[in-house]
Image 1 (tube, rainbow, N blue to C red):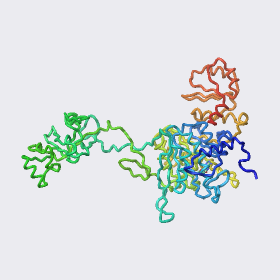
Image 2 (cartoon, protein in one colour):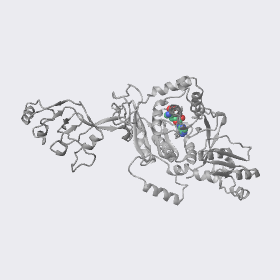
Image 3 (spheres, helix red, strand yellow):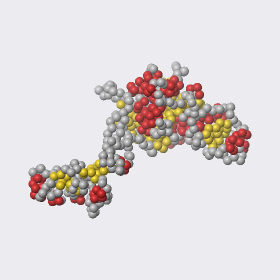
Image 4 (spheres, rainbow, N blue to C red):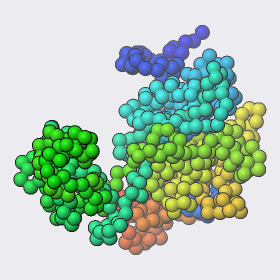
Length: 587
Ligand SMILES: C[S@@+](CC[C@H](N)C(=O)[O-])C[C@H]1O[C@@H](n2cnc3c(N)ncnc32)[C@H](O)[C@@H]1O
């Protein structure tokens, strides 16, 4: 029987052995065919065809729904959008043994001995492609359950080295337990990101700022004027502060003395108390309330009797200064203005429980049941099992993106992520774009099944058309694309101009339009670029290009050398359609 290494040349075998020697011994091991894996990415070229009848008009389209295996869709996206995606959210099949996962046109057998390895390798191949899509401030968020989280995390550490930020704990349901009187009602959302990524977090509470005295410097709050040193450790902080308006003197708490010094204090680094008083930054609480001791003996006796001012101590270095003065009973504080405060948002908590603490922000996300209800509301039945709740993805996207960003979900299922993006855009007026990738889930038994067309894209269509007031503000036209494999050697014949046009528009950051194949050349101009793809040369092209006052004109042709001769004298760079796409594909 032929072995799997029989066809390999000696150099391939040596390469394989060297690779194995280099590979880490610590970490997760799963069965994988390294040669097949290495070859797969460049085994063939991927084209995406716009299907106008399944697209949601009007064009031009910024949102995309891509039908196909996400391995192919990701290869196409890596060619066209590498380094540009701000947020990827995915909810891959959990591989729990239920038959919910179509792999290579069949459901993965729950009894398969290699079930976990197949799952890990399946995800690994997709994640290394997804990694290349992320912008320098991009993030990938991956939903996972308790059972699979540990191996997924180890695998992701290999697929996305150095990119782990942590993971969210999300409560999926109320009550219920599995076994051992232990309720597994939490899922996880793993966070892997590029170095410039940060969650939005929350703005600090501003409620405690106000302006009761009409201070022209604006709203303020007051902070203590203390430091964590006692009167023996820092004698320079043990003095009486005089309120010039009331002539009342305030002693510090002997266990937390004044944090500012007096004029002449050698340790003074910032404003002295005298300067702060001049700037009207000092607040006296219980203003005007005081006690008075006429003699030192009276004060000492009161201390012994425990009836003295709460801050009086027999061994205070300045006790005699208290005598004969009005000694304030309130505290002394310093004004802090909202305008001076640097807005450092509270960091986002990893626990999604809605409890907002002083030092972290936590949002509450809906439970799984919310996702099911949303599907029923839109489809009138259970068109999809276990969709995620829109509120979970909406909050994750809100925390990870700004208007104008691209959000990708390449395990889109029922397109909850698209709905989340639509809702968020409606809320903040943003123009985030979504790219949903979904398989058809067609199998030998159900060859005509098309989940992408009938559920993924259909959800967005229904939201666009819905007269439910909840969805009234939602509207997102999208182009429906279908992936297709083409052998590299057949590209010149099998890649139709319209599919090349779709790839080039995406590559240049342009929304998609329908290619006019009757025209000798197609043109698409935005403020930033003008894209021209020439199918055949006509003299009118020369005149048109001559008239162009625009900058950033990119002219593409199938035979650039030939076109360059026709256009001699015009200063424009002519690029090869084929070389540009193949180079970007094989990066
Ligand atoms: C857990 S579901 C995602 C559910 C989704 N988050 C929602 O809220 O509806 C996973 C989806 O991935 C899809 N899927 C599985 N393998 C795929 C592949 N190779 N390419 C594209 N989609 C795939 C399945 O069809 C399924 O719809």
